[in-house]
Amino acid sequence: MGNKLYFVTDAHLGAGRDSRERERELCALLDAMKQDAAMVVLLGDMFDFWFSYRHVVPRGYIRLLGKLAELADAGVELHYFVGNHDMWMFDYLEREMCITMHEEPAVLEFGGRRFLMGHGDGLGHLDRRYDLLRLMFRNKMNQWLFSCLPEWMTFGIALRWIDSSKQKHRREDLCYKGEEGEGIVRYCKERMAQEDIDFCVFGHRHTPLQVTLSTRCHGHEVQYVNVGDWFTHRSYACFDGSRLELIDATSYADSGSADLSKSEN
Image 1: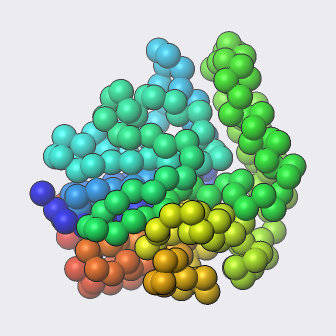
Image 2: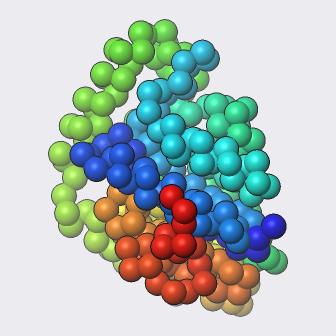
Image 3: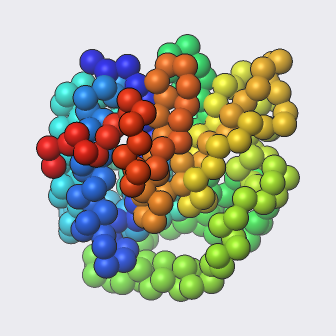
């Protein structure tokens, strides 16, 4: 059994022409993690869209699903925080692979440290319009009504919505806006005032970032890490028991963390 904690986020499999290649690279990373991982946390939006039907599994992603099952069978503890693209996963991964699913941010303990983690969408209440939209999408009745539609219609509507949403995003939206301008950071500070936290780790922003927050928690410093994404940056994070490191997988940094060059895949 390994002794490291890994974080990966925002692969958006199914989007872009290189989706299959991204999936292969992600599987290679997970295969390398298996050598020394005690826990792997997926911080959401690993799929560009997912909707779990009772008897139907979305087409594709066989390599990733198989690799996750392999890690689970090897005794690696797996957690999945749903994002704004895959919030309708429900209990499929939990039933099939014993992956612990989280719909909201949570504090998990590892190596004597407390990690506040989650996907990151809708936090800090900076966008009231999105807050309402998120409530609508997560409403159980709306989810049931959506599930009554044929699969081809469900995915057609969702993918058109996602495409139109992406076109509205601007490059400057991805830039770090400072502690008061970042909804995730504001949320972290609210939680830090309520409980002891050592690290805050999130995704969603597609911006690899590691900073020490200006606010101390119970007298000690707190690091905020945005893992970035596997969509464009190929970034991930590793905690080795004492240090949390943000890693660029494309550089194959010799840090003692998961190294794609050592994978058999």
